[in-house]
Image 1 (cartoon, rainbow, N blue to C red):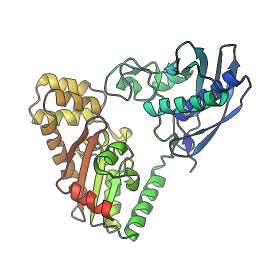
Image 2 (cartoon, helix red, strand yellow; image 1 turned 180 degrees about the horizontal axis):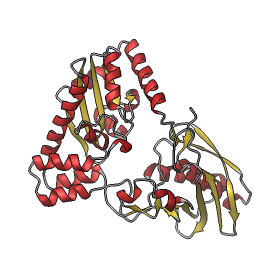
Image 3 (tube, one colour; image 1 turned 60 degrees about the vertical axis):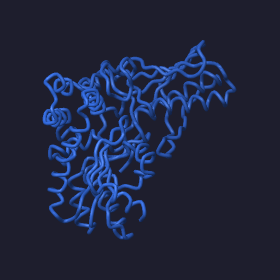
Length: 365
């Protein structure tokens, strides 16, 4: 299946092309950038508008074979000279603004996430060096169709108003065909078992990559990525003959497992705050705290609330107990299972009794 490129990659490519045309004075209809995944992106540049002190252009989003609602959208970058030093990045029409805490960007910022911001800055800086330009530049990212597209996303619920988010951690969009993903997960498990591994290391994705490296010296890239298919991955790991499995993941995914949800995709259900509130109630939370939790837009924000109320440790114990109950129920005695759960901002939130032992065995293998 064909992969595509994120809105973050599109924004970085458009910004690089606009900066090139502004500083070099020559039109650019194609540009290549490096994605964090290491896959180059050669983008076609359209809608070019050159002025004396600014240039704008667009890249049309291509999500590959992934059913992405932003495919076909024009991601526009306007680069203009600035009296300030450095490269400033802002959002224009069709890019949402954050109005609630707990998301990648602080309240008041445009919803251009950290990795896309870093990509834009890197690519524009490269052009500045090439052009021997040492002044300031303002980069404005806009998506003319963004406000309409945002109605089909979770952005309004998350408190992102006025448009879509500029997203992406790897720079590419990998096809999300369920069958293809499950086949890939099975192949990876089979390969690792054939290499003699007895404990399957599994993670939904790369959230917490830096935390795991910093805390345990473990690279999550070595784990089998199960995406949202936690239950089916447990089934396959048992079928492949693993003696045990270690699941490491962000609370945003694993909190759903505490409610017995084994496919954590948002289209299958989103009860993160309800499950956190239920655990907090059991830990002694009052009505005011429960209402705050239910109003939180992201699990990181919910953890902050629990920490302020001195309820986090007890709540996470309850959550982990429920997670382990459902993981062991799914494993059905066919293999042992352990779990580690973390948050990007707050680090480790909980782990089962055998988690560290399993991790040490995996790292030694």
